[in-house]
Length: 434
Length: 166
Image (cartoon, rainbow over all chains, first blue to last red):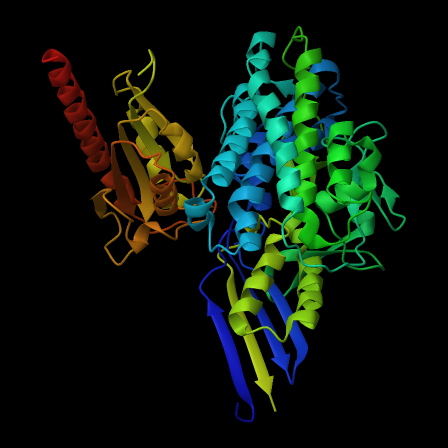
């Protein structure tokens, strides 16, 4: 190594991440000098795109933001619109919303745990490589994903960009028999999810603990999907309508996605770890006992253990879906009436990757005057950088290939849906020694 | 084969909110009402991994996707899948698993249809929020539709031929 020599690792794009982005690490004399996790996207395109559209169009347009979590975008948008228009959706229509959200969680977590994250822990470049040696794992992941997709198809009309969700409810409420047809596969999925918790718990998981400010939707009676207050483990407890009073979004040169922080405090963490820690007692007993059996306490601050928490949430989502189906009675109408009016509304729901906030301001005729969408991955950007620093601090002795692998794995802990905000992730590690 | 099972699957991959990335869904939607009942048409699939399930009973699978290579925009590429796909199908847009990766995975899992044909249309503009195809890609739509109809008809005729001699 000569004076001022630079070691660089270039990776064209980070695989197994939904979207595109970049990461740059600079190490000088063995000290981490700079960590940048950048996101490149035509900024905030959808917010501009929605101005002038009718409030009824928001669920379908926002569902196009992400092919992996369209339900989350639909749910946050319909709740925000209903908040603006003074409408409350309850009873079986509310239950159907929770059911379709269960489907999305099962699909998204099944995909991430088996197809995207497990290869990191087992030392495979991808699920394709892993499939050659562990076909049963990949098949189980695909079947779990399909079980979630099927719920979304039955309730949402189709799996990708579901078209059945509307402000006020649904265009059509499913027959009880349509939901009962899902039960056998959901019972399989619940058992497979319990097996998944056992499987991921015995993986070789790096040990770090972060001092996260965890933020999640919290509901008095339910593990959170659609409704509740925004609560943190460090004292935050606000209504969704107060989001902009407490959260700050700011532009940073290296990223087209706005960085989020809690005013006067700093970065925070949204996602499965936050939901879990703030709602542990509301998990279904089967999910809770699976977590305890896996060695998790009621709070988990190791981002690498998110793979266990996602698996626990799959157990919960399967049980929740089965309970909703069991209690389901087809409502008399598929939706409540919603009339256009001027107003402002807020919606915060729990996407698989964490809290997703929407705000809309409407004109008298129901046209959208202003829209704000704050996706979970954008909120986690600063926290991801903090995790990368923490991992680098204890991993600098690794050779470049191993270090790159570990940093990519650190980013994948967040299941980042960067396409809500980015392009491919290119990775560059620069080591300078003087 | 059970009754009602679709033995031919035509899937258009892409997002119509991203300009030419929507060429697959556009072709699939226009074809949907014109193909025989034995054909399942899927438009607007932007998670190609779902092809694995869609192909469960398929003997012929046709995939239409936007591609980026060095060819002129609007160029129609057609590949009979006999092995791994070339680079142009590997990295595209924000698809989680590319069509190429799905084919690799399907091959490893032994879950591939008897025949897979991938038709790629060279994209010019995949800007988010662009709701139309560029003129040069729009001009290729008819070419692709005609090609899909021919592939489906050939399969249909071959099937009738087989049945006729059974």
